[in-house]
Amino acid sequence: MRTLICGILCSLLAGLVFPFMALAGENRTYMIGGAAFEGYHAPANGASKGLVLVIHDWDGLTDYEMKRADMIAEMGYDAFAVDLYGKGNRPVDTGAKKAEVGRLYQDRALMRELILGGLAEARKLRPGKAVVMGYCFGGAAVLELARSGKAEDISGYVSFHGGLKTPQGQGYDSTTPPILIAHGGADQGIPMDDVAALSKELEGASVSYEIQVYSGAPHAFTVFGSPRYREQADRKSWVAFGDFLTEYLSD
Image (cartoon, rainbow, N blue to C red; front, side):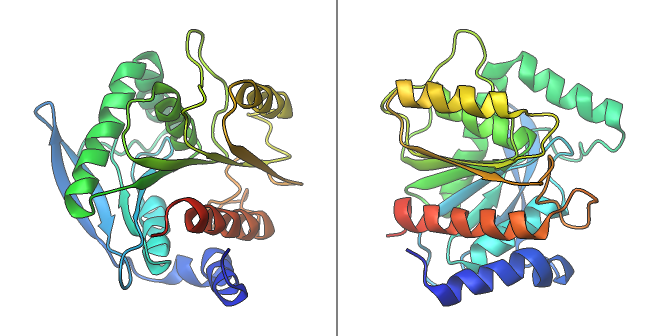
């Protein structure tokens, strides 16, 4: 388990200090099927304890995921934030964001291909086992990859306020690595019925999982500076995430 000092430090970084710090990593262009994508690599502070793949929300890869990647690097892990939209494609208005996520939800095979392409790029920088985590749309994409069984050497999956429904024809099995779900109890877009259904599904498939529900936390409760941001839920979920990494990924 994480030490008390480390837990307090990560809590401060998540809730107060980090949003005002400059980014420490670097952008990295990579190719998938002849198309250019631009991810973000944050190397571990000190000897690396493993690789964490970060999947963005419906905005595309922005400073938010880059900041989270830097926070992961401070914890001693190599972090790589993938790009599922393409280099330079960062939608701003709601309609454009809906179009981008809709394109990937309608083509699940493409979604998985793009995640795996980003993972392959990340492993050029840090080979070996990895944990895959994501926010909102990225959390749904994390579970898409978990159900696919296509990714190798994955130690676990983590979804922060992500979509939880399983598409028809898909499912989990007993070989699925451990899963951590961080969910807001006041999330109006992803109701508690979805949480209960996922729990029942994972139990039936004998998957190791943990679901954390934070009272009063709406959808996107971890997004710094947003009216939806809830410091306590962000802090607690980040500590739970750190514990998960320590248990399932650290050498």
